[in-house]
Length: 332
Image 1 (cartoon, rainbow, N blue to C red):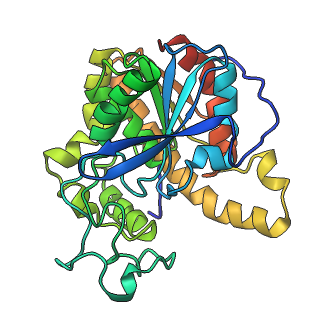
Image 2 (cartoon, one colour):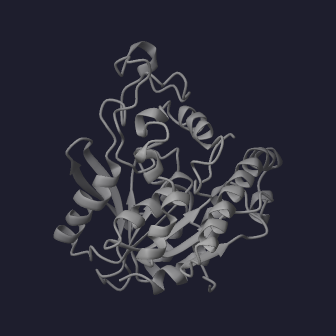
């Protein structure tokens, strides 16, 4: 197990990935994490009632959210008159409140060469920085400090918001909506970890988190305890039904899309070699969640399993295009 798990049609403008000048930085202080940046994109019609939080994947960067770097989804959402909030940072965090700062063998963060930003997860395991020099408290930030700052400073509606994400952000979106139903009426997961207590999943996540920044899953949530089970959509599925949360879950087949082939041959081959097995795993995980929800008689879920789609931004961008009409109808 290598990594993630991760209607109507939307006519989208041409992709203009990278820094989007229509957004602005919005800083909020977290009691434990310090100043945290989000990127905010205002709805084209100026309303403050319709809001969606857009969550990144496991390799979240510290400068911009991956959705802004790799897609034009913020621009499309603005066109649907939806205000967009993109938290920045939180690599391997699962947007959770962690049990403790990430560390190994009781070694203090920032020790020796491991403190350098080498790009290798193993060499960074004993380093300092986000989630290591302090405890991650992302759930508290998103549902408390950021939520009320958006209301008080921008007038954003703090209720009936949407939330969606990919990979770790997908499972986090369902978790946030399950435990904060007044804030989130809609949750979307693309290639998400939706059955993390299945055999082998914890060790698969352990390997993924080590690779993505050198983080220790045991510091996020102790093995098989209440904190871990609280994060498992397969376990809290009845809560999503009881809340009547509108849920959208998607995973690709692992076959490349046309966009994946319309790039230089070497890059396309690399994308397919990496993205096919990961998305196949995501698909199996998401199908297990589907079976669980169907066994409970859930009528509040849309399932999206396109015939092509790798574990790649091409897939997730198209997932978002298909989801947006349903999101729009279930927030505000």
